[in-house]
Length: 190
Image (cartoon, rainbow, N blue to C red):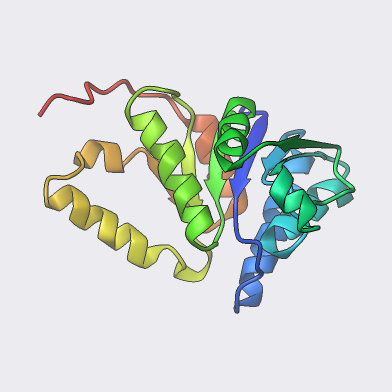
């Protein structure tokens, strides 16, 4: 079982109520299955929603947040554990260290940056943990299409594209993580 699930998501709720509802469902699923949430430590938007859902369901939520965001008063003070770190680089490294798998909910450029960094780390062999997209109402469909184009144009291998788990159901995505068998690719072979 992938015990610690790191969730990347927006500090905003977005325009579609389904984003909040799916963040809530994911949080409840994490807690109900005895897993722990690892996330960016914020109290607002989908970040706060997923953390609150985990806590409401009796689970544990671990936040990792840079000091600058604590000073901006965005930290969630009701978490099981809140680690304050020096900067964004340290935050991402610490979340990756704590996590057994990574899920991206809808979010903005910060969410995309976290997703691509951790997926890249897997591609070059820094970890062999599952990475997935919770594709709420087709939010990630244009990105998925673009990633297929990246592979079609020879900038990524098609077999590596298939290492990104994609689902529109929180429970099904977590199940994909539990079924995940790491594959070792020769990352530099043509």
